[in-house]
Image (cartoon, rainbow, N blue to C red; front, side, top):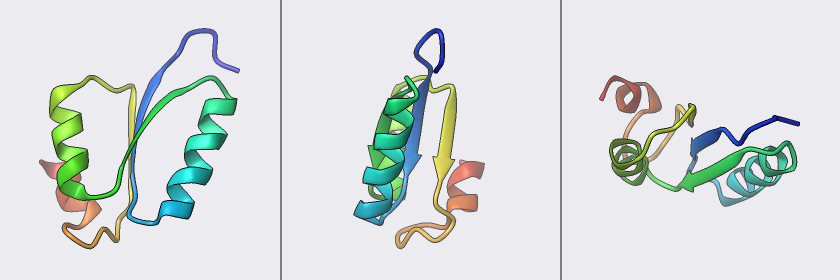
Length: 70
């Protein structure tokens, strides 16, 4: 378990994957925000500060690597 909450943004279009990762990271004490699309993730990343951003490579609206470059 982490001593202080670290914020994580997780971007994935699969609801079951988002739920599983969100649950798992919360159990380990992380503060997690999820997004379903690349555009949602990009807006959240620009508006907030995260310790870590996890991206799905196969997002339907934009490739995760392309999103990372932005």
